[in-house]
Length: 373
Image (cartoon, rainbow, N blue to C red; front, side):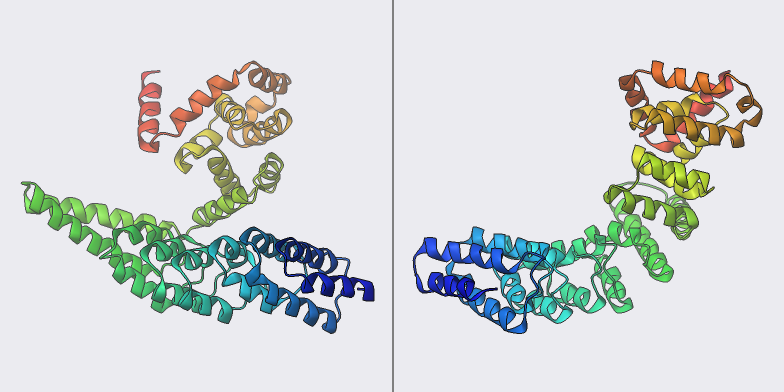
């Protein structure tokens, strides 16, 4: 920064008008935030001092713009970011959700002293540490705590898990997200399943006339099955589904990616990716990719907008496993491409909607149809 630049900033700072204040903020952003500048300690101190004095006197939209610019820049100004993170939620939200400059101590202080909206933004951060999560649980509302539980990137301590499981007896809304967490200790999950079952038993007996022994047998059977499914949730397929869901959120669950993982024989991840893209149950997905017939996967590919070339490669790879003799016929590729080209996308989407129904129902229908053939 040149001496002329500094004098221009000081001149604007001396002008108390609203327009001068707004121009000063933009001038500071222009001078200091672009990546090409390397700030000296003196320049950094000057920038921080000027901005922190101005922040409270400028309009909210300018403060919000400054917060967003700080996020996009590599300039490290922790004092200024702390001030903006304590501002109104419209200004603070992007920093609370994304800033890598704010430390755990900064976040915990905000959790203790600011609003539930600030806590909710913090609860949605990536890679949230256990101390910050503990503070959110202690000071947050049920809305904040539910958002925290649903954040798979939030690290929850064993003590926090035990507290939340206990609270879920009182607040039903915690039950589903807790049981969906991959890091919920099995013994706590078992405890939840059984006391939820006991609470359901009490409610049914209060509202309906039913034989207690019959009800007990049914509830015990259902609970044991749920526990088994929960334990299966720690399996390779469950981990694959979590990875596929994350890749979909990041926009990386592409046609090319699916072809690559199938070529690498990572079948669990391929299945999970197809199910995530199509929003279908894994049982339906397995039924489609393991079928000896080509049509089902071609319909699915058409419905999710998979490219023609990659669809053909995937069908050929699946066919080599499911029906190798059929894949040896010279006309097989022509048949695959013709089926894809002639298939109306709208019709494929209607079929996909049927597959997106309850999996047991769809498979039962399919079994009846095959039994009649």
